[in-house]
Image 1: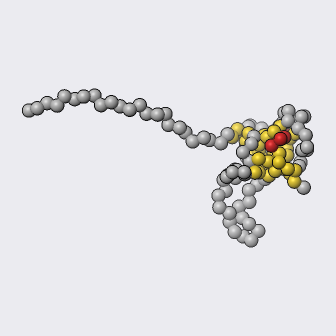
Image 2: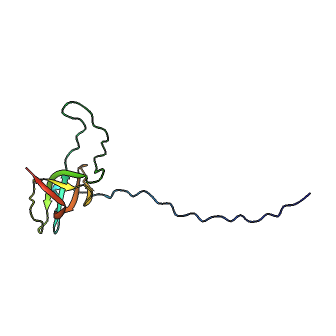
Image 3: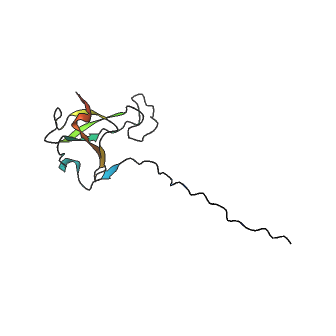
Length: 124
């Protein structure tokens, strides 16, 4: 009987797997009306995403976040820092959807802290 010498098989080192980049979401155990933005930051509470058109058609998706290049979000300003200019509490604004830090408050309401320069327009 012929014996075959076993040679160690070279194992290739695996490259570390990359995890998909997750959206940053901070869960804050507080209410949106008690938070004060600092510096030139603005707290914008996102408008509720519409899931149905006026004609009765249901919209696909429902992710509620920004999607695609150039996405923007509308919302209501809940808090304004001392150095922020051009916006006031209660204004409806259009902001860059990819800017800022997302937060979720204890009542489930979602918002973003953005720099005042990320506010694209004040809506009337």
